[in-house]
Image (cartoon, rainbow, N blue to C red; front, top):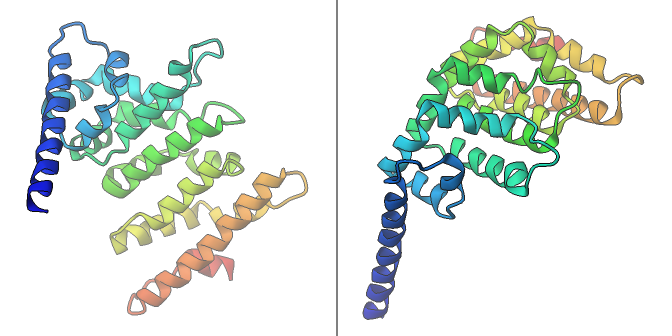
Length: 253
């Protein structure tokens, strides 16, 4: 048994070192392009184990901009499959890999945040696949770079309007839920609840349950209201000593 485990361990490290060596060799190329790198099967694995050369390449401003563009911009209908599906998918996996250096770079660069935010402003209907990518990237930022992202969103006067416009897209409903659940610090979470209450999120979700709206808007607005009730009650139970009432729950009641 011991020799078997030792052999398996040796095989793993041989494979792992071979993988890193291959990628490091590729990264030595002076004319290496981002698409060429993303074609490598092990790029995400190497990103998660914090391959320094790889991160240095990915964190170049032009490469970060390109990855954000892939997850937010509609690809050309006539484009090849890699442009339409593979690169956006791999870019999303990299941006949401929860590598601190990537989180820091996204959270600190307002031009990247504005490019992400522009997805919500892109039209009356959203591409569902891109919406899922967008929601995942925003979700990791809400969770890991909370102060920066909440501050950024609060400065956007049209944020709640855009959330409600696209509430029929499930990924946008999920984004609202992430905003309500992924802010860990109690005071900041309460600030977010108060901000959304000031924006009349409850009343405006109720307005979405109207015959003039489509079924997806009805369903997702109703689900969001149920989530707000559940989360507000949970927060009230957990923070019984808090002198500040839950404004969202008070509005619903």
